[in-house]
Length: 348
Image (cartoon, rainbow, N blue to C red; front, top):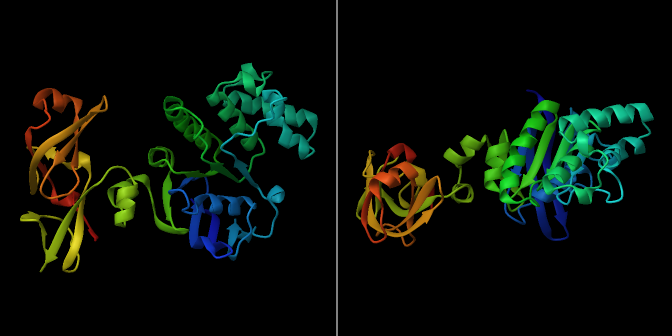
């Protein structure tokens, strides 16, 4: 895929506040891209700059090789779908979707044909005459998406698109958004603070912190090979063990930690995902402790284990089948093993 959108050293300041600083990023054609970060990381400001609602303090934004930084929002081939959906309450579903096309002056027959087509795609043709208040949250979300897609933008920007939905509906709509993006072949750029949402939906993810890009990669790369301690702790659950490195040997208290990479001598942390810890299983590494808490999640259990290697409990994931066999109990002693390849070492 070729580059569709190119951000070149983009910065935005509000007085003395640095909201976005020196972001350089290429986004591809037909890509589902996620900007992921905590509140104040700069992701929403960056999205508003792409939409044209915020000017740039420095840098440039290119669309298909041409600068769009000076083009006003209504003239850009870019649409923004707001978290609140912003549907007109007095209009029907069909009228809401048609509104943007009518404002562009398209012939009535063409407007009707395009709206009818997209109603079938979002599977709401039978509700075309209803008002937004008569729709469920998921249906309103699809209407807002259809209103943005019907104008056939080159890029669709989504600001926390599923934030207003409950957990079950959010999971369903994650797959629905992914299906629609693939069907329309339009580049989606989504802002979210929800890690699971980014991992499930995006082709690539950018983690933002303090206005800059911390790491960009596929969901698997971001999860399995985080580039920093912050990225490791921000995505999913991660266990951190304080370690000391001396002459290449990694020690957590009096326990040697095996890893496939190391750092210069000094204090550091070893990071291991809960699902990589095995109860009495294989692996070059081992640690023992006492089960302090058991969190039941249906498909699996999270064991919170007190160990001398860390001030905070180590978390290990156990499948329901394993739990049926091993029957873990609070207060029980347990030994965890893991492979050297599953140990990440970060500066302290």
